[in-house]
Image (cartoon, rainbow, N blue to C red; front, side):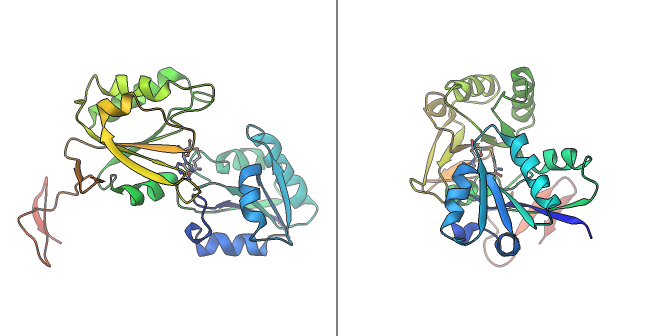
Length: 261
Ligand code: SAH
């Protein structure tokens, strides 16, 4: 019999935003392990469950704890915010898992901030898009710059994670300056803060305004593509349906010609 660890994405915060599969995995677990803030969120829902937390930046320790508990025969759930495979601990668990061949890992998907935030803002990612983290803790800043440039040149809509932290207050400004080399300052943008948590808010703005915005570490930022528009206070990246074809049938133009869908 293999030991079992479920790596669970719990969504942005509010219980209803967790998938049924994620809730079931937590329900079945003997012990839930996570970052202190998420464990506190879960304490109300699972008052009788064994819960273990480690502070932020102690990710390796948190993963080790999961394997140690699984080796005792417990069914373990490791929780991450959003999705565990988007700037989460899923990959580190698989790397560490080489040392624990008796332990089986299962990833349970969650709603990542790009998706929950996009829903609040309208439809900012409704065409090809890139997700870029502005955190240079694990990625050199030069790599981040290169990816920002490539996304701008490729006319992708962009979701920016980790736009700020206590130590890195100016990363969003630096990122906007790079994007402004390629994009106009009127480019439609937006940001969301604390989705599914106390203080939730969503705002639209231009790229020029975004440059001077002070955002916090619970913010996800959205940059529209060349065709994005702010409609009724929402940030909309168009899919390409012909506006003249309103009604039940939409005509979608692409490289291969028009297509009825
Ligand atoms: N695994 C997480 C991302 C972790 S990286 C996920 O899939 O969502 C941390 C960054 O995610 C934050 O800096 C912020 O940009 C974004 N984020 C996470 N939760 C958020 C929330 N509730 N509201 C807005 N942004 C959030």
